[in-house]
Image 1 (cartoon, rainbow, N blue to C red):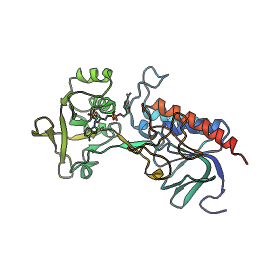
Image 2 (image 1 turned 180 degrees about the vertical axis):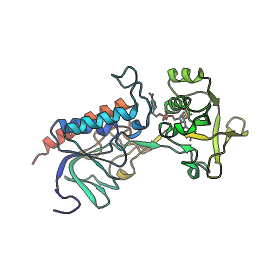
Image 3 (image 1 turned 120 degrees about the vertical axis):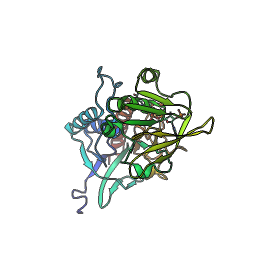
Image 4 (image 1 turned 60 degrees about the vertical axis):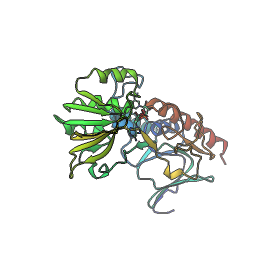
Length: 314
Ligand code: NAP
């Protein structure tokens, strides 16, 4: 027996990440009688917990606040006996019969692992961006939008996230400029229509941000028109970056198969290249990344973990 893992327990399933994929996996695994531990570094819920309103999760005709839906998912998983631990996982040992999840001196051993670490917001990668995080640069409108009451903000990106969050920001800001590198949005038509019809939402088309300027606090963005090369300044108090996501798979690189963009290669059965290791949610190669598809993956992964445990019982 050691101090860091006082029970020296070997769980049936260890789930890494508590977004909708991990939470659903925990619910299904625990409910089917598997001893289940889920390890999450932040607040359970992942990206969905930073979404102010989810309008397309079935069963909620008026929409549901992301944090509320995620808290309910966690409660449901815990009700069936899933253990939720807060720790920053820094190493995963996925080979062999007993797999290990490590965080500093803490360690959890399990027969199966469900990878559900999701994805993180992509940065613009321009000068000034890192320096002004917390001083006007944000990746979460739900978290920071309220600071911009009566102010002007910009949103970078043209996908669903950018438009959903631009519309949310109209609750606080006097003007929201969407900066998009093309002249056509990627977002769903229903969202586009709402944005085009909103008096507070403006657009900077064919434009990219080349630098974020300000001394400790954002003063303005430098925009470049990609068609004409012309540079202009846009004075805003806040900029919200929504240019897509990258998978959180650095810890599994070299252990399970990844595609060229770093997503875990696993089919609809969530099986990775390693036996007993499953991938659920946004970090898996897939066509549609939504709360419901993440949740679906979680259910499938838990079912696969159950089969694996049964088939490999000593
Ligand atoms: P996304 O669909 O990948 O869109 C990213 C946007 O950022 C695109 O418009 C892209 O431009 C732009 N972009 C990418 N790199 C850029 C760069 N370096 N500089 C400037 N612009 C850049 O990402 P997302 O909007 O975050 O959505 C992710 C997933 O979640 C999608 O599957 C989406 O449908 C889903 N989602 C759904 C909802 C919903 O309400 N249903 C809400 C949020 C997210 P291009 O268009 O030119 O490529």
